[in-house]
Amino acid sequence: MAHVDPAHLVELALRNAIPTDTDAEALRHVGQCDACRDDLRMLTRLVTAARTAETVDLPTPPPEHVWRHITREVARETGAPPPPDYPWPGPEPDS
Image (cartoon, one colour):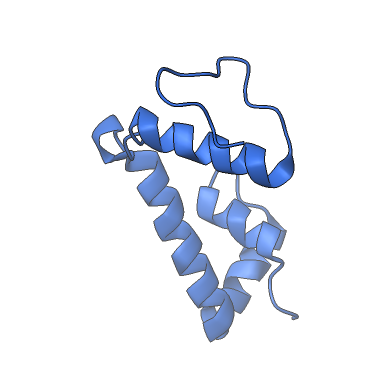
């Protein structure tokens, strides 16, 4: 059997569906293929981490002055207008 399709490995890691014969065949391959086994192991760890994450685990947003700087840089580099809630309090972007 060829390597298991990455999308199928994701489905196996998610375990959202009732296992099928195709899943059993893929798992037999995973049992014999180091590359597919490593991919499934990594995806399973990722799914577990995502499902057990709590609010405290999530990154905090950067301070407002960081967002102002990012907005100024993006607007200057792309010529795009700043977002509708701009300007924030503080100095205007460099022209």
